[in-house]
Amino acid sequence: MIATHSIRVLGRDLQVKSVATPERVAQVEALVNEKLAEAEAKVSGGDTQLVVILALMNLAEACLDARKQLAEEQRTCSERVAGLIERLDRQQL
Image 1: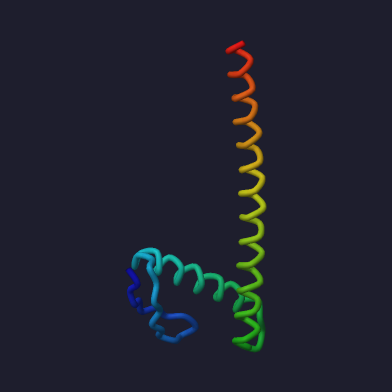
Image 2: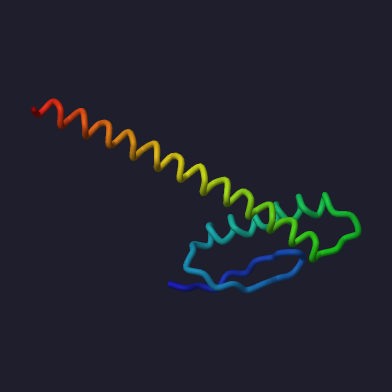
């Protein structure tokens, strides 16, 4: 069920709709604010748009790294399962 949640990002109070639990929305809000604060610490001049772009770039990089790691783990698991199936098939002969 879609619910409305109140969050605060970049000093702005926002209402967002989500099927996620309030706890999950709070986790997302905390991560976004954490990444924005990290980016803001690296940018001089207080350009909000630049801070947001840098935070998005950092999150995108982390997302791509996680996707790559997941794909590698899925490949490893598939290879292990195939090996186990092969061993089982040999024992049945």
